[in-house]
Image (cartoon, rainbow, N blue to C red; front, side):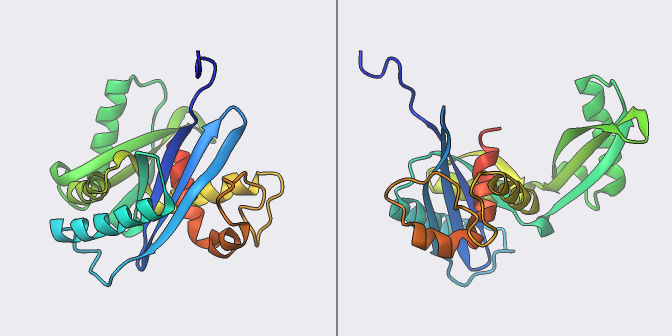
Amino acid sequence: MPGLFTQKPQRYAGVEVGQHAINVVELSQSRSGFELQAYAIEPLPTMALHDLTGDTAKSVAHVLSVALSKAGIQARSAVMSMPDTLVMCKTIQVETGLNEQDLELHVRLEAEHYVPYNLDDAALDFEVLGPCADDPYRTNVLLVVCRQQALEWHQSVLVQAGLQAKVIDVRDHAHARGLHWLSGVPGYQPDNPFAGVKIHPRLAPEALFCDAAQLLTACGLALRGFD
């Protein structure tokens, strides 16, 4: 039976909406590891991206659709970045050993001290980082908060472009993740970050070399999809 012992590689798209362009990276993962399947850099028309309205979302989604089509990106699940200016990140400390319900309640109570707007208008997430270095009875937790309107705008862009939003990530975190992964790939070169990465045969290494610096964040976003 054809296909019985083969598995289609899992794919995710990383989408970064920059000031002047949309950067998209599609990664797949199989038993042999990650492969760069496709990427796109599509210029954005001049618009007020800080204006999180339906009109701007529609315009950005159109440009993203063009980028996906030109690059032949097949992934339908995506991770998109949110500008750091729209997100608040804060590491807090909580008592070690809290159950999930108590942890969520504690994080929300802590958030009230740091978020400068009503929590009813906020989208709140957190990640347990591990025990505090100087106190084994306390645990570090990363608190991430943005306005609900900002989250919905980014989700809307993906949906209108035919993508499913798996995660909306912080841009700085995605950039660091992409650089960390690439620098650990054998053959990595600082001036050619994708040098050691397996790439689809249709991609031109020379063009990728020129575009690499602009793709680091989108690469980190795509990697987040596999978490």
